[in-house]
Amino acid sequence: MTRHARNCTAGAVYTYHEKKKDAAASGYGTQSERVGKDSVKSFDCCSLTLQPCRNPVITKEGYLFDKEAILEYVITKKNEYTRKLKQYEKQSKKDEDEKKVIAAAALEANLIKFMNREKNI
Image (cartoon, rainbow, N blue to C red):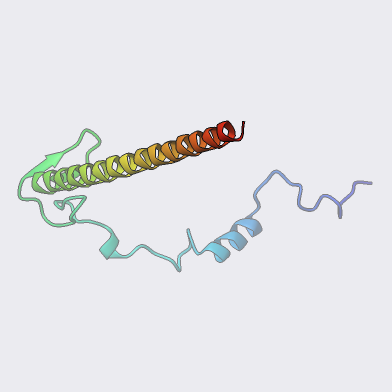
């Protein structure tokens, strides 16, 4: 006799019942959850702005972009990166100054400690 009750969930096959149960739980891949028209862009629209292209550019993969949108995106990201770089440099300079202050305080403490020991002798 085989062990039917012990191995009920050990099957390597994804059954029809399991598919239905998972689809009902997630809502994905079912007839009840459809993608709307607003999420699909028109044929002649930019992939970034979803507006009709005035100066179209096509990538090797076949994506359609408006040249103005690409340049605007590049400039925005460049400005963002320079701002973040300035923040990083400012923070690293602040950290370095703090380390110098801590090192100077430690040196001063060692010097005072040494002077106190020398006075006691």
